[in-house]
Length: 230
Figure 1 (cartoon, rainbow, N blue to C red):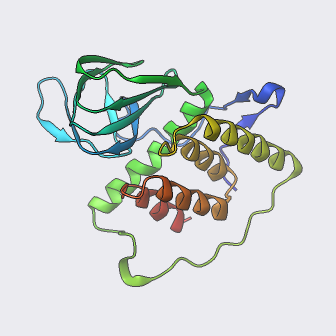
Figure 2 (figure 1 turned 180 degrees about the vertical axis):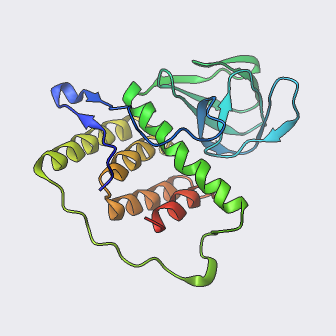
């Protein structure tokens, strides 16, 4: 069982995250937001740097200049305040710590996630960054060798743990009812909570859901690769 737990209390589904000794901050931890969806293409450029393509699950840093191509769509979730932005069509923006500033083009649709949800989404970044390093080193690629992971026996939860997971699922359903069909922020949130309780089968089901919502997002493989090794 994972030692690092998120604690929840049920008053109005108020969630209290225990941040101490959470998963380690990923390399390049100065990112201020996460790209949770990219349909189409876009590029980013750090001040004084070169332009690079944007990919789903990429962290963007304060000061990054982003150019979104015509007909594209990008979802951003900010770690500090839970701000959620949806940028559609051609746009040039500057990323800030708590939100982006449009320079030209479309204006974002803005929403908000509870701060605790944004923190859980941020924790998933540690998994994603680790998997990217492993993939670039050639150690693990999805489907390599044709071996499937052995089934993992479900972990039995104590009554208090079942209550915490149930509260997280309630929050997930609320988030899901408010999110766009292609937005996987709710799934990333629940994935992080379930990881604390070693609920691997439920996490695998979430990966299937994420793939259905974003079939072109190959970065979801990073979460599956991590889960296969648990």
